[in-house]
Length: 71
Image (cartoon, rainbow, N blue to C red):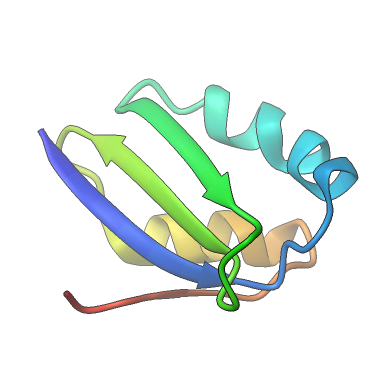
């Protein structure tokens, strides 16, 4: 299991609700959460063997910016 961290343009709880079906539909994702209090609107993903680029494209198709943060 790995943890991936992204900066996003998701700013409101309503937007989290909008992307929830996308994130929960991916079997490799075992957990996820947004930190909307953070200035980067952080998305943390717990997953098994998933590409950060896949997560970025998933959110981008929903109309949100998403970029992996190196840590």
